Length: 275
Image 1: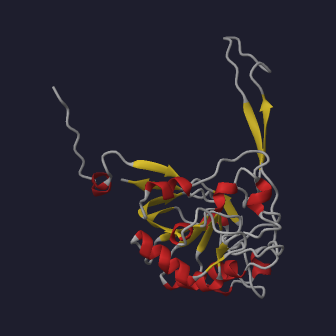
Image 2: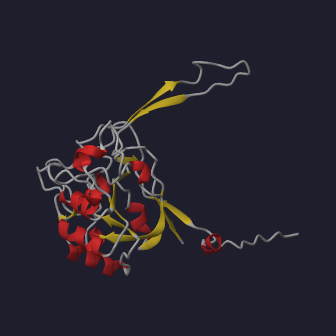
């Protein structure tokens, strides 16, 4: 006898029979590239198999993990950046951070997201595998990427911008681009995204915005524009090569930040579900 499963849940019914899950996050490992503004990731075994053996012969291992909230693939909380002493919505940053954690806009308030995602493949739109170091992605570039993919972000969507720079992830010096600069969106492009009402913006680089050669992370105007002015979350260090290879410009985007009380950011494991 064949059993046929039925569901009355419209969300489950809408899922493709064989959904493909594409990882959008980079792996975490000791020595991985990290913004110079943040402590790096470290993992080591605290207990090894054989250190303690139970009477039945069983043994367990575990680890110690040390990391900053903005290391690896992560999301910025609205407490991460202030401008002229104010966070998003005019919140006084000094008052909010009193006591060593944020009483407002902490990472525990960064929402989980299950929404439409749109890939804006700027590298492909400009006919290259990887944008050159320090290249500033403009609103016109985003228009080209949206036209190429046939999908434009709308209100409540998550937009992910591919520069191709993640191809350097295994080479920390090249990826961080201290001398070469790092490609990324400009204020012009940030306004383009904000005008469309996106909920979050992500990129496959360290800072999710243009870093000119030799400039480092000294000034980050797109962070101010998105986080402070518009309350739009920022995701950095995304892995977008596998997603680009699918040729699918729009997808179901899923992410669940850690609820770090009073924090300024959280590691994440974002996923794209494509048919």
